[in-house]
Every structure is written in C-alpha cells, then in structure tokens.
Length: 171
Image (cartoon, rainbow, N blue to C red; front, side, top):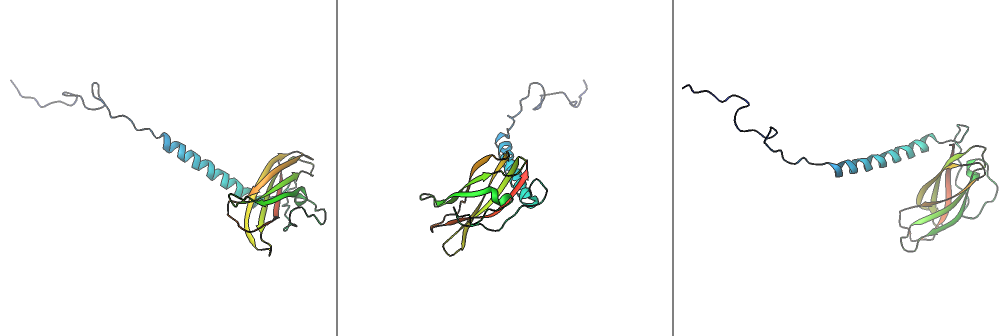
C-alpha cells in the first residue's frame, strides 16, 4: 500500500463549504441609518450656506436691507424683499429663555418666491445677544406666510427683534 498525502478538497469540510457553518453575518443597519442622518444634516447645511452665499430675488440680484426698526414699528414702507417681512411678535420664552420672533411674510413680487430671513435679538442698549434664521418656500404672489425665527441661545434680558437681512428668490 502506498501512502498518499491528503489532496486539497479531501477531508473535513472547512467553514463555508458544504456541511460547515459560518458565523452569523454582522448587520450594519445602525451605522447605515446614522450615516444617512448625518448626510441629510450635511446636505441641509450646504444648501443653507449656498442660499446665503448666492441670495437674490427673481431678478438674480440680491435683495438685502440693513437692520429694521424694532417689532411693530415701520417708520416708512420699505421696498423689495425687506418690505415683504414684518415682525408681529418678539419675546423670550420664560421656561427655555430662548428668544423668538414671529414674522409675517407677504410676497409682493409677481412670482412665487422662497424667503430666507435673518433676525437678531438685541438688548435695550442695542447690543446683539443672539440671532436666528428662518425660511419659507414657494410663497405665491400676494400670499402670506407666518414663520418663527427662534434662537437656541439662552437670554435673560428683555429683547428687541430686528430684521438684519431678507433674501428672496423666485421659486
């Protein structure tokens, strides 16, 4: 009798071959969901930065104005996008201490438009305590939209709300 060396494929099956067993495969569902959420947040940040950087109204020209009067005061009718936004309430939430501004956006242009509004919260001396952004999209001509600009900074002083900037872009 001759002695033969074992040939490949002969002998006991190895894991992955018939009769062998593989360890259970790890699932990456949590990682996939986490990275998906992170991707969505990154996309929102990029789009917001792009809108702020590009800005503009339907005529491809930025419509920007300097800070406005405190809530409720409109010494003169403003034109362009700035004139489309009015502060209707300005307060600090007593529990969270977060300042917020209620805004009424009225599209006075001839095209459906998207709005990005920058609001700042100042103390009695005019010192900026916080700021917030808000937006409203696809506002039809002469349509009104109520939105809130809320900061997540805690403020303990009485605040005045001022509109710093308004960007209007045709939808």
